[in-house]
Amino acid sequence: MRQVYRVAGTDLDQTSLKLTITLNQSERPLKPGAQPTYLSQLGLSTSSDPTLFNLQDRLFPGSGMRRPTRR
Amino acid sequence: MREAYIIFPTLIPFADSTKLNLSEVSDSLYKTPIYLLFQEGPPAKFVLRLQYNASSTGDRSTLDLNALQIRDGSEQLIVNGRVLERGVDYNISYDVGQITFLDPDGLFGTAGTTQVTARFEERGIFAIAPTSIYGVASRYSLGQTGGINLIGIYQVEQSAFNRPQLGFEASANMVGGISTDLRFKPDAVTRFFNKLTSSPAVAPSRLDVNAEFAVTRPDPNRSGQAYLEEFEGDNGVPVSLRENLVGVLQQAAVRRWRDAGGWRLVRQRRCCPDDLAESDPQRHRRRRELRARDIDPSIQVAGSADQLETVLYTTLHADTAGGIVQQNNHSLWSLPARPNRPRWRSMVSALSSTGVDLSRTSFSSSGCSRAIPGRRIPPTSRS
Image (cartoon, rainbow over all chains, first blue to last red; front, side, top):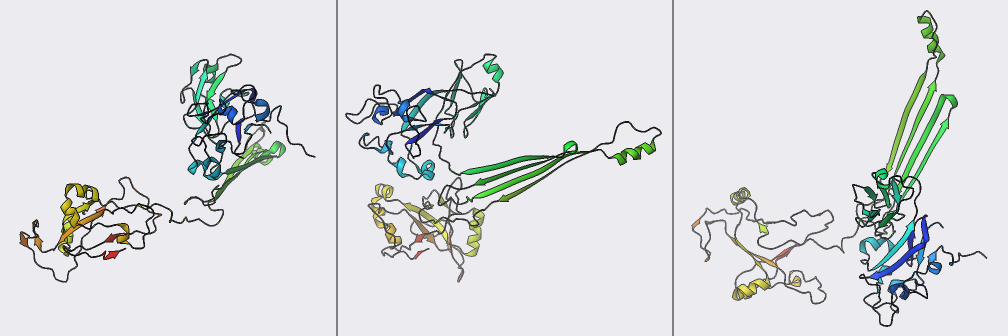
């Protein structure tokens, strides 16, 4: 799985996590008509703020990401 | 699950051409096998910058960054606005991401909570050579007599490569030890000394047995076989034919050659099509232009890389020529003839000024041709 990136160990304060993605020190994608940041273009930002990392849905284990359950 | 992970919504987020421009796409990141990512993977393109708070408890002389494979020299630690200096304020283990503060009392004082800001770059957490370490420590108590301690460590190193590098062998090492801490009270010794003295001893005799025994069992080749890589895909070591790099042996050796009837090397010149054509076009035209296929017809050259080969032209004169041979091939005097004596000449050229590893060389190839004025003769020998 190369779409999963490890953040930190056991003592992480998840609410304090901030993430930015840059290419050549720029957060703005080059593709015309793209979102204003790579964070939002790659689907990691919240819907309201393209610069804010979506902790609830894109951080595991998070409060919003459900663990797989056995049926 | 005790760690945290950022999960992209797509499987190959940095190779998605629908969201990234062609200059931004890094699809090699997903095509390169994991075990080759560090050696042959694409260079880092995107940077994921994370900022978070993490708490640390316990010994305040150490700080765990909770990161592995930190890039050397990328860390920056700030305490109370002061940037700490590595080697003066702290030491760091880049492999496991652990920082050891050299003077935690002077650095943090008596304050209850101190904020340490750490910035660092972390490489991927993919292992190059997976290493497993198993350990066991045990103690068997014998009551008042003492006890026996057992300890053992077993380390296994494997290769993540399907084709390991030459010289690497999956190895293992086991270290085991036993130590005793035994205390005895020999009454016989007490009775013996009581017989030597007029009054019996008050303190009992005591015999302590402290012994250690350790054994190590290295297993340097667990698989029982070594892998030898084929050499077809490796680049060769070219032998430079530049005239300033090709020389003869020392004068003493040359004298021995002459005594043995060796050829005299009078003039040697490198034929490089570019500079010779500019400096002496007429002379250049008289020289043969050689391509790789002229030396070996079996050589197949792909594309337009069929360039002229650099040729070292060497003029040899008979060993009877005395003094400096003139331009018209006349010698100043003649030396006695040496019939039926071998005549040869040797030249040396350093492959590298700093040394080169030839242990993986499987063969060497060279070619030479004999040029006679007015005639064109194909290469006479190749080895």
